[in-house]
Amino acid sequence: MKKKFQPELLKKDFPIFTRKIHGKPLIYLDSAATSQKPTTVIEAISSHYRLHNANVHRGVHLLAEESTEAYEGARKKVQELIHAQKEEEIIFVRNTTEAINLVAYSWGRSHLQTGDEILLTHMEHHSNLIPWQLLAKEKGIVLKFVPLQQESYLDMEAFQNLLSPKTKLVAVTHMSNVLGTVNPIKEIIKKAHQANALVLVDGAQSVPHMKVDVQSLGCDFLACSGHKMLGPTGIGVLYAKKNVLEEMPPFMGGGDMIKEVYFDHATFNDLPWRFEAGTPNIADAAGLRAAVEYLESVGLDAIHQYEEELTGYALEALQEVKHIRIYGPRDAKMKGGVIAFNLASIHPHDLSTLLDQDGIAIRAGHHCAQPLLRTLGTNATARVSLYFYNTKEDIDALVKSLEKAKKTFRVT
Image (cartoon, rainbow, N blue to C red; front, top):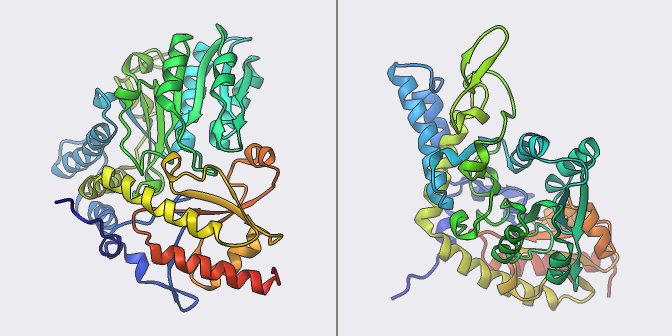
């Protein structure tokens, strides 16, 4: 018999949900910006500093060995989560943004030449756009963009037509942080590889919510952030195929990324440490490990299925609100738990402020995707983003608060 998913019980694992916001129970609908943290993650970070604090890789005393095991154990856990072939294919960075910049600075500067092309899409987060703009300006590289169909989906025919012998990299989000659209990544990777282009996948919004298997997908790079998947801020992951990493020069210089240093030259460390200069974020790696373990205990398949059901419920409920405009797919099977919308002429910031008075946290603004919002014909939207600790009751409270906001602004 299939076990019933119980978000109400899981919510009890998150201390922040004991808080009251303006006297109301917290309803957190902003997990695409950052997720909340379970007690096990908070305790893992605290325990590291209380009992195991020492630097990694450099000491032979017990604390150093324990700290190194925590750090490298986190790498092993991430490898297992995304099904990387080797541990050394997992590079720890601060966040998705740093992971993409690492690829742009190291791989991009050493492998791309004037006239080469990078193919992006209209739905990219600024983190998967600005690094390539900087590189294009420096190296004379051409950026091309895959447009949208029906304001929701990538135009795959246009994608095929934009691929050319000059295309060296395709950089694409797995799941849009505005539209919620889950892109056909496997198809994109297959077509890009047929054109001899590498593929970078922005997995910031997908890895926390569904099973992602980099070997099955075949991507060359994958970037994601710990803080969006129950982990702490300040720790993220770059996955890259080992043969690709071996051809990339170091991103930063300093301690731990070297083998031997002389006054006039140095030799560099093996993977993955070649790309992890200086003292790393050890405590937050321990927190990330605990976050992955928590996700595994709940089950990513169960999380994905529940969120799909909850997203469907939210879409139906929101579409009953008069004067609402929802952006992105209306089919919950075609998107993740992200719903961007505008309500009549109420500015999203005003709407967010009113919802906050009812203890409801949503996002308002351009969501670090200004070109996409211009394509949609707006400068800002409100955004609801769900995680497995949300419930149908949260959605009902949201709709009730939206109706109250309409009355405040005299929208009839």
